[in-house]
Image 1 (cartoon, rainbow, N blue to C red):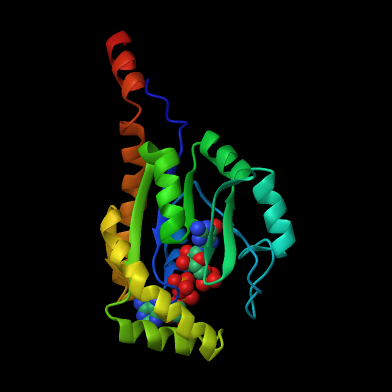
Image 2: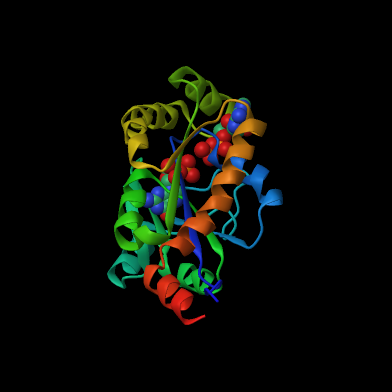
Length: 207
Ligand code: ADP
Ligand code: 5GP
């Protein structure tokens, strides 16, 4: 039999405010056996965000120590703050055969692709337009106008990277976008197993 106990990675990227967190909350009830990767960041928590739930919030010094210790699978500077994915919990979740979900930026996507390409499925999420993105960032009401401006400026550059992803979801109607994401999450596990080439062939020959 082909070993079912092999995990897969699903990467979500897209401009801040496009709806990644909202979409994920919506799909969790429809997928099983997943592990959401909680990133570490030096950015300040927003109102309502909890340490260890939304992010691990650390100081710049603590983050740089983790870099020195080689603790990250990937990390990047986004909007002037560090964001990174710790390697240990990811390894554990993959060993347990889980679908590991990342909400990381385009730089992080590139690094994880290089390191773990065969088990990665990626989806770029965006709004129908820049105007809609601006209005979502404003109505989320969590960031100062200065920070929003920076995020909008970054978004213009980030959107060009959608071509490096396996799938694109335009998050206009939340329910439609959530259905699309559930389909992609399910296919991510199947794709990951397909890439275990040697094992598939030897198992097929032996049985
Ligand atoms: P991200 O995690 O990508 O930064 P959020 O999930 O925080 O984005 O969403 C940004 C804002 O947009 C939130 O206020 C959220 O309620 C709203 N939002 C998300 N998806 C939709 C949608 N499909 N239609 C309308 N508003 C949305
Ligand atoms: P926010 O501050 O809005 O929560 O996130 C800002 C950006 O950082 C988003 O594009 C998000 O995907 C990205 N991000 C969050 N965690 C990580 C991470 O661990 N690594 C990388 N490379 N980007 C991350």
